[in-house]
Image (cartoon, rainbow, N blue to C red):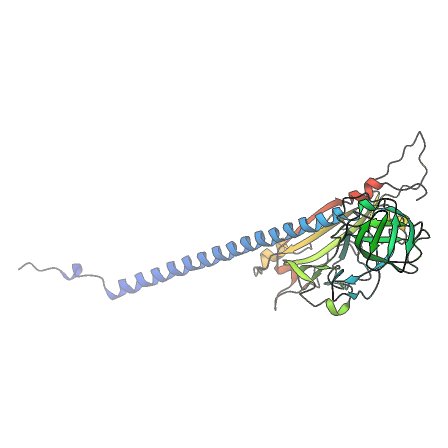
Amino acid sequence: MKRFSNSAAGFSLVEIMVALVIGMVAAIVILQMLALSEQRKRTTTSSGESQSDGVISFYQMARDVGQGGYGFTAQSLFNCNATWKVPLGGAAATAIATAVPLAPVTINSALIPAGDANSDTVLVMYGNSGNQPQGNVIYSEDATTKIYTTQMPASFAPGDRVIALPEAGCNNPPITLDSITATAALNVTVATGAAGVTNGTLYDLGPGPTILAYAVRNGNLTVCDFILYDCGAAANASDTTKWVSIASNIVILRAQYGRDTLTTAPTVATPPTYAKVDTWDQTTPTGNCAWTRVIAVRFALVARNNQIDTDANLVTAINQNAPVWAGSTGTDADTIDLSATAVAAGATWQNYRYKVIQSVVPIRNVAWMGVPVGC
């Protein structure tokens, strides 16, 4: 019988233990590489998701801002205080708490409860009527029957929302966002009616005017529909059924007015250069003439990755400084300040990555109107 030597009988215990140690080390290295790869993948995926959310919500907001003023681009209407009931025309409608000044776009309106720290609010208004924005002359009124005799009653339709502006102007008392119930011959019948509007103007905002308030609340971009809810009520600010989230991980909203500041009278030698932005700021106009000079809005959304960077070297290299936008000067309130944004326990704002989505949006309805003579 053939015998095998001891050296060919198999592995020794020492050899097996060495192999196990090598295998364990290799497994640990592989697992660490997989964990690091998964972390990088989650970071990249989250960055893409937050950027997509920011871009989509930015597009929606930019579309609304660009529509601002449609249906009431008349100097006499700008800055008029308007009241209505919410929901507009609803059976259980209740009056809003405070009259709202009419303007295409208002930044940091005193009516809107503030959002997250160092973030702005934006109020946008526009109509959806297919009629001329210049309005119709009101020849006579009947406060009892709520009937207006107008210049072109055929341009109105039942269900349209209208504003009757007195010849003497507005704000004392506030004007009313009313609704048409019937039209016949030269008459337009409204639901509420207003006295003292003979020789005034009836403006048609269409069947579905839009009044939206945007704000960043609890790290989400939210919007409130002023036609349905009293968005100015402080009690509604924390109600997520009224201030609806349209994008998560949006931590900052910044906005500025773009103004045409030309004040000198044009001549043949120096023709007018209206509809040209000369300055950017956050000073809200105080008169209807000043509103005609706001022809654009510059705004930015700051989207944040929801994955935390724990590598101190990465944090120092990438996020040591806050992101900037076109309105940043480094010294004023328009600068992006992330120091007060909510973060996870044990983290700071530098432990996250950010993406700034920004653009200039022309308020074309105001730009087309031009700056009236004398403004």
